[in-house]
Amino acid sequence: MSTKRIDEATGTQTVGHEWDGIEELDTPMPRWWLWTFYLTIVFAIGYVVVYPAFPMLHGASKGLWGWSSRGDLAAETRKANASRANVLSQIAVTPIQSLQGKPELMKAAVAGGRAAFRVNCVQCHGSGAAGVPGLYPNLNDDDWLWGGNLQEIEQTITHGIRQPGDKDTRTSLMPSFGRNQLLTTDQIEDVVSHVRTISHQEKASAASARGAKLFADNCAVCHGPAGTGQRQFGAPNLTDKIWLYGGSREKVVQSLTNAHAGVMPAWHERLDPVTIKMLAAYVHSLGGGEDFATPAQADTKIAANARP
Image (cartoon, rainbow, N blue to C red; front, side, top):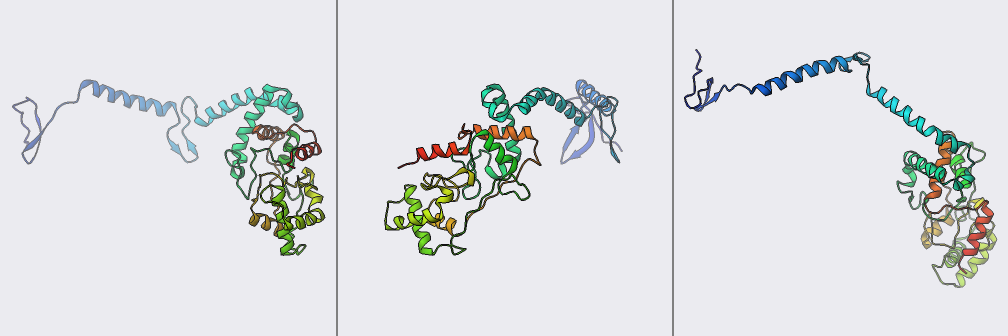
């Protein structure tokens, strides 16, 4: 039996339900709303016909227009690559030592290298290229183990550091003076005193004087007589304030006792030569890039700038 009735106050029929004395009016939807609803249905039908919509066993329906987001991305990628092709070809044929003489090309190379760095290098050197103390070097300063001009940076990126199987990789080996019993514990302490004296962290002492003789006999062949380092061996400058593995007495003792031998992958099998060239340009632009043609010239400048 229907309980619908006409509400006296509004003149609208009720839906026939009552809850605790409350009834609901059967108010019709506004006509504009109904037409909008019908239009959305028509639009939805048209959309699934024109565009990919229905999932299938091996993909989805293609749609009458044959459009796809992947196809759209591929077209945009081709367009972007075409616009970059001219610049990339210019970078490819320009010797890396000549890039700085072409400001616009250098700017493009730095931009491309920045993008490549974010994909391939931030995992170790960090998003700002500041490195991680004790693990990965800071690329923003002007201290370089193997050289900081464009050619030397390109060489390092291409062939890596101590990369097995690459005959052109950067390689050197510092002895573990303590572990291999090349120096006694007291002798290591004396060498550390000398190193911390030439880096202006300690004042000269009897221990540093003894360490100077030991340094000359055991360390100068790589680090140089004044301790300013030599690029061809990847031997760091010991007279400045920049320390990859730490410059405290404890840290230097650890380095002498158990030498470090950091590694970096050779990228020539993973990245094309143009990308490597752009990476070198970006790293060079970070603030410490050098213009010297040879490591010997760079070492000459380091020695000249070393504190007395």
